[in-house]
Image 1 (cartoon, rainbow, N blue to C red):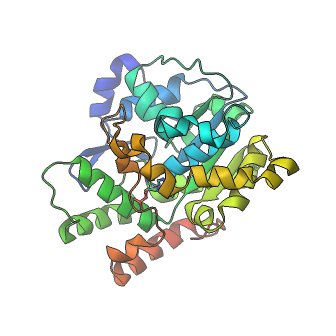
Image 2 (image 1 turned 60 degrees about the horizontal axis):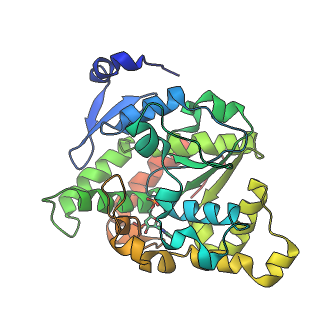
Amino acid sequence: METVKEDNLQEFLLTLPSEKNWDGTPLLLFNETWYPASSIRGAVSFQQNFRAQDSDIILASMPKSGTTWLKALTFSVVSRDRYSPKESPLITAPPHELVPFLEVDLYLKSQNPNLDFPPPRILSCHTHYTYLPESIRDSNCKIVYVCRNPLDQAVSDFVFVRDRVSGIANPLSSSLIDEGFENICRGVQSYGPFWNNVLSYWKASLERPDKVLFLKYEDLKEDIILNLKRLAEFLGFPFTEEEEKEGVIEEISRLCSFDNLKDLEVNRNGVHSSGFSNSAFFRKGEVGDWGNHFTPSMAERFWKIVEGKLDGSGLTF
Ligand code: A3P
């Protein structure tokens, strides 16, 4: 892993390979990862300064893969002895406030952020497993990774970024889709390449199943109850038989459902400290929206590339 002296960071950043993301904003290649230039300071600082505790829970993902949902589910599972679903802090605070991002919230604002939360601390990141701070990999903390069909992830990202950039026409124009598509075929995307991000966690989950739980957005959509049970067991907070009988799992799944969270006042009208509207994190919440934006021949070309990259790993989509 490449390390950087933070005093020389500005100079160092100027030496990094750079590409334009599809929306025109710069991406910088560091540790084999395309970081948005706007948040790379936070990523470097996180990699170099964060010290994990054994009780930490780290939620990892490519952006737009279901991170918000995973945050809500994990927070609810872990804090259920303190709050019933009816009194959950999720009703008045967005998931991203209850579970902050390490690179784009905490370490972007300070090289030494206040991490003095009661254990277990639930934190999230988009950094590839290979480049996580050693203390995360070496401690007993748990990692949950969520991935998603990369074409749905890309569409979700295009819309998210478009809504943030003024002057881009609505709906997604075909030229923007074409540019974005060429980028994802080359792996040039925030925290990409997709295949490196996802494979790093996939391999870690096979080597260390007690440490890394690998989830798929589509599986959560298909059977949230089963996956909530898996999540709770993995984290060391299994549901008791009594809880199962009382319907606690169903209650948590309802609280964290797309329709419920999207309609909460805080998520309809609130603004996240990064400047995003909370509503930007709740769009359609569907599987297969890529079909409304990419043609079958684009998809075929993309999957050929992805299958080549994932070949032999056992990971399929
Ligand atoms: P779409 O843009 O396809 O609707 P992230 O949280 O990683 O930023 O990912 C955002 C995507 O997850 C968006 O996808 C968003 O709508 C979806 N999402 C957010 N909350 C969800 C939930 N509770 N259940 C299912 N999908 C959710």
